[in-house]
Length: 247
Image 1 (cartoon, rainbow, N blue to C red):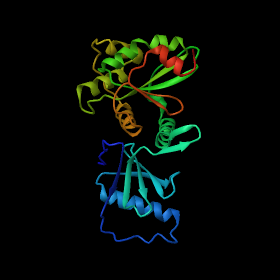
Image 2: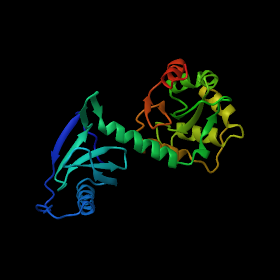
Image 3: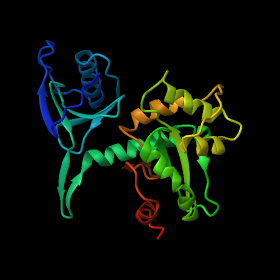
Image 4: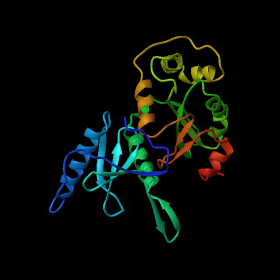
């Protein structure tokens, strides 16, 4: 797996043994293919989802399977991890976060939302997608405020993200909630710490958990807005409604 570096930005040179790449008269597609090939061979387990030229001349933007954005030089020899910033007339813009946001929006739109456990607002004005762990204290705190969010016109769609991962008690608990005859009642009970009857069926819990990893969920709750922006952690209902421009 590609290891996320702790420092904000880092430049790493890899001696791959490919020899120097002659970039003159090479098409953009060939450059992208070569970068993808070098990264895949250099970093075992890394899956390159896309490679394209970035806003910064000479750097290519690489999207990986674990949600990381990597930057590479044309020859694929130098890599940079971290956020690419741009000075504008309005101040400093985070180019990388804008890319993450759009990619997240597209991935969420492509996923089958029919598998979510939904708490709809009668007078819907906004929809939030919440990656949740039933046993997470702050997820439970947020769930207590779902009726208030609904009153503000915010529909809450739950996506499974049991932090302990597959084949764990928390993961099976979410599957039981999803497979319950009344998903909302089962979710209410589980979030309140009450026992939910064990149940099994074909379910999207693993797919939602993997989706969370791809869109950059690292903790719960993680709230994805309709435009692809992510709010990490618990936010009081009123503040979330204010942030969405509903108050």
